Length: 384
Image (cartoon, rainbow, N blue to C red):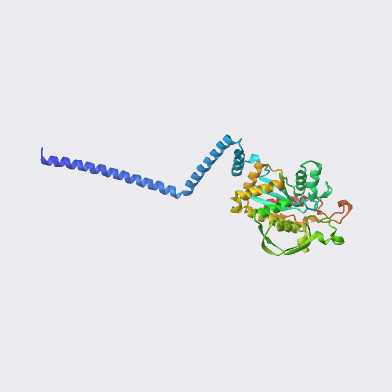
């Protein structure tokens, strides 16, 4: 064979191999460029990727929860599992909601060892907005006159229970509905003994006393009928309380005295000042409850559950409790407190019409002004 022909053939093979290699390299480069472009586009929209991952995760959790609930729903573990499910996913069919709100009446009574143990001297209308995740607290004076009962508002719970078994909350809720002009879906009654134990279980609470005050006639439990050795002023029945302005850590007994004191001189001796102090303590309890050393302590939570079982009465079913707990957690930084303004009320002279009692009645003759004010407060506007 001709030598030149052999060399030409050899060179042709080499050129073909080089061309093939070059094409492969070009294809590889093109793939790298394409991959790089896709990568850049993806990274440019990282939030979309994150949402996709989060959605997949949540969807997976929902599927697992749904399947597991079906499988173990009838077991004791299933009971708690269902509560966890309600807490996480907030099913609307398990809680009373009207116009995106759930309204709850909070009452505080003296309980055993206190004079007039069934009178509810703490009366707070609370409204939870499921849409804005906010909570409004409105305190009402205990001395509001209820003409239908011929008694003060703080006795509605007592007379309701006298009328029928477990009728206290029902009558108290309807009485407050008439004043506020809003429906009340649920009610909670807290015995002050339980209130004290809750604060102590939490390890005390921090409050910021707005005004210094002293109360020389704070009643001592169990001394209501003490003759005090013939002392005409019955001084042995009372103790003197003093609170200094500023921040301080208080225990359950001190917290109870702080919210119940009503004989201080000046403005701090009014029902309106006491209502403000009650809301101050509620806010402090809420703040302490949401601290991680409480929320993530099974021991503390079990202790609080036991206290609640002994001293709290409510018509809220357990599924609604789980949902409300979640909503309250969401509203922890969006809680607003108000006290029904004195300007809407008047204190008429003691007379037979009011059984010679110290009472408040609406200044305009009905509760229309209060209804308008309440609506304004719930809309979170400047109302007064």
